Length: 321
Image (cartoon, rainbow, N blue to C red; front, side, top):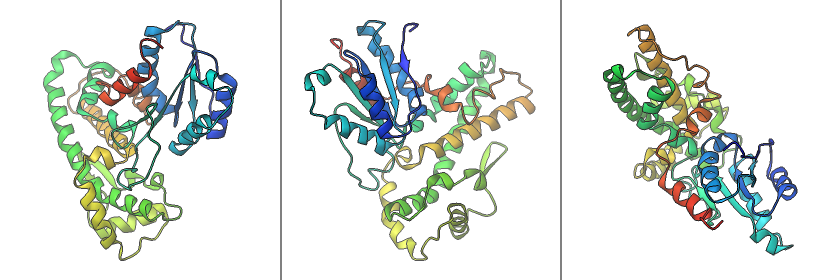
């Protein structure tokens, strides 16, 4: 891995990523297109590990951050539409990674191709919020001593209970968001929904803030946060959405960033409980598990890798590449 050469210039749009690709292209080089830098934290290691099993160490892997799912697809279209020098393009391996988001729930069409990986769940962050990832945080990042195994087992049990509670509580918020996405409400943005203003943890238990468990109060709060006005008759429209999402795994419709919010919050509360209540000392991990670093910290430790991702990498980087 010491000989890895990976281009990491910041790219803000499909046009910029495409231009970088045209300038950087080299024979026998692997090109990876992703939405943003967080995606590289997960995809880069398994792809490069596979690549260097069968290629020379001086061969270059080029990565391109396109800015969004739509821009990754736009780069794909631009490259596929090039008619010049087709023989040269056949010497390259190009792979693309995008999040599924709400495409299936909203019945949106998207490009399907052998070299485009679409997450099984809502987004790549969704894979990082499992019980196994909690174990990895406690044992590999916090470095809990084996003598604290009973405490770890208790925390895992608490995590499972609260994760299920989170999925119950987040459902009306996702219904609200899916409704506005479906009807293309102007200026609606999931980023405006700050879960810190809706939920809080008390003694490791997730709770509503300010009586927001009342549906009407919650909708009013969400309208305040998003600065939009939800129609009074929207309840009839969300009934079909509610029926659809009731049939699928919450990981498939709950926003990945919301899942990461829960994961980070409960970990921080667990660590506070261990430090202050049980007086257990452990490795300081505030930097590694901060909001800006947690995906990078967990991404390279994702285990097990989704089988669909393993199969995709093997299919696109064969032994003969």
